[in-house]
Amino acid sequence: MTAQTVQEGEPVTVIGLEVHVQLETETKIFCGCSTAPTDEPNENVCPVCLGLPGALPVLNEAAVEAAVKIGKAIDADIPEETRFHRKNYYYPDLPKNFQITQYDEPICADGDLEISVEGERRTVTIERAHLEEDPGSLQHVGGGIDTADYTLVNYNRAGTPLMEIVTAPDFRSPAEVRAFLAELEEVLEYLGVFDAERDGSLRVDANLSIVPGEEVGDGGEIADDVLADANRTEVKNISSHKGAEKALAYEETRQKNAIQRGRAVEQETRHWDESRGITVSMRSKEAEKDYRYFEEADLPPLQVADWKEEIAIPELPSARRERFGEEYDLSEEAASKLTTTKQVADFYEDLASEFDPDLAATWVADELLGELNYRDMEITDVEDRLAEIERLVELVASEEITTKNARETVLRGMLDDGDDPDTVVEREDLGKTGADEVQQAVEAAIAENPDAVSDYEAGEDGAINFLVGQVMQKTGGSADPGDVNGLLREELES
Ligand code: ADP
Ligand code: ZN
Ligand code: MG
Image (cartoon, rainbow, N blue to C red; front, side, top):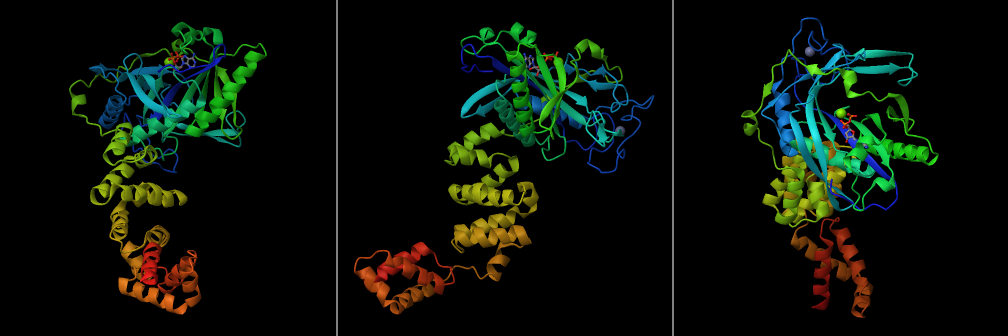
């Protein structure tokens, strides 16, 4: 990662991540079982994902395509040929007693991802990203992992395609990790290979060590052998950005305290207990040799050389953010809001091609996303109503209704009652009052309020506000207050 300034002599926090992301495919990675979420335990299973004797894996093409897309997005090397391996260990959620994964020939190597932390751009190296199958899931009943009365096993998840993304130890704070995870999720969603809303779709193992200040160079650089020798803990069971930041902040403090008291930091695996907000020791850290990796003989080597050229990826969020800034002259904040998901960005570009890009930005970034957020909704929840929202913006752009009514009555009515904009406008009689009617109201307000008029004429400018209020009342709030103000002044000065 690009070097950053650190306080000389101070110990430095070093973090590296292993992120497991669930790839959005219809079926599992080595069998035809559905990956659709279900509440029925052990519903989506077959001899392959249950590890029954004699069952053979068949690789899912869609999982490979997703992996190649990720590789392209992080600018990784994708080798001509890649292989699968068996990682051997026993755990009740792993019916074969080995996990099919990739060992020394991963599908993606040496990529990177740019993040922005407190306005500063940094590049995080991604050492590798490989395909593997997810184990099943365990449900601890009557307590946590170490206190439960008993545990239920569910193999619905077993065989779900995962991409394990391993970063270099490039992070220097929990906040950087959070920024990275947010950017990574955005990219994955743009690629259409990931659903952040799906339960457990992102799981993070986070490695953290504290490197003594004297081992850190002036520019913040740390030698590879120092990094390799630093005692680190691996925190498992992190399933959100916020969780990652909290777990790592806890772990950072715990290790610093141990060092301060002259105790060594144990090299171990720890479990993040979300509800208690602490990490607890699980076991001493396993070494690679413990897994007895060997080649998966039931799957031939995978050739992706020619195929990968045909797999295209869309413009990514960072590029799109930058382009929005230039092409539509948007602030960084607006461009950033409008590119958080591909759906939002696509919708914005639709509107910006028809209406004023500034007006479109306000309506998507502020009004629409604001109202959706307030209702705990996403753009995907109104996917089939984008034409209606477009019509609403058209009503505003053509000044058929006021901005205030559009926001407070029409958009809210659309979201809360499911009505289309024209229905709400008609029902609430929001059509802007015609010019004649406004003019009549202006004249009437002047005739009916001689005191305010003489105050105005005596130089008391504030009296105009009273008259504006009178006109607004007469027109039922459907006139534009700025226009009314102008009309009144014209009338009074003539
Ligand atoms: P292992 O062989 O223990 O799995 P790896 O070299 O494969 O170690 O790295 C696993 C993860 O540990 C990577 O995400 C890497 O960035 C991280 N890591 C390596 N060294 C350190 C360190 N000194 N502090 C924190 N994380 C580290
Ligand atoms: Zn199956
Ligand atoms: Mg490793």
